[in-house]
Image (cartoon, rainbow, N blue to C red):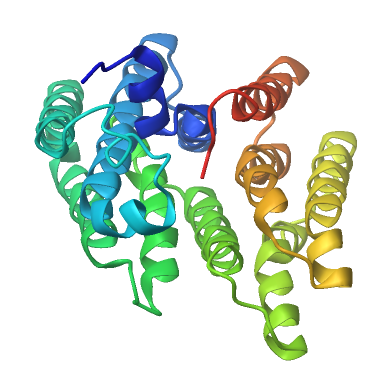
Length: 286
């Protein structure tokens, strides 16, 4: 059994990692606790949490993958099931250690994030509520990351958390094949566009140009991604990776409306988005 770097990158679905870095950056900016040391420590920890969750997911799905996705690393015998589980436990432990070392008071949010990831991985198959759990996994990144700074959690942070939650939940339902009927499809589209509704309700006259850019970019990309699926009832598969990358624009939208961040910070979100799309061509994000 030959285990390669590509095997681990595939297990980790590493192409999607920049979207979690975007979430951390967004949370730190929204509570005013951004330091580059804290940012890089935070993205290291969230990367380990994300990778641990992906490894645990493949370990749990090994029987399903043997039948439906034999190209995945475990059924392809590129790595053993026991090794994958051991890696997941180690990654969770290291990420927990980093989080508590950065800020002991983050323990509650850290534990909640671990429990949510584990609950999804162990109970997502044949569970109609699992997209809501996935949404919670993504949403919990924001208060977890903010708690690492020791700052109070702001109202704007909870707006960003809610936007990511409903967007991710809608995305996950689409990925699971929901939307066979027109009413359900419309409801899922509403979920994807809800971040624009949430932040649009907070419109003010300050920094109008950045707000306009943030709103336009988010709406245009989301509409582009869902158009084939919505109009032609085609397989949503090709859209899923693009919508995952769009999580960077969910954060871009939040920062453009809720902070006075400069153009350089906003460009960083765009860079994370482009890196996600680029690496999805090398490592599958689904």
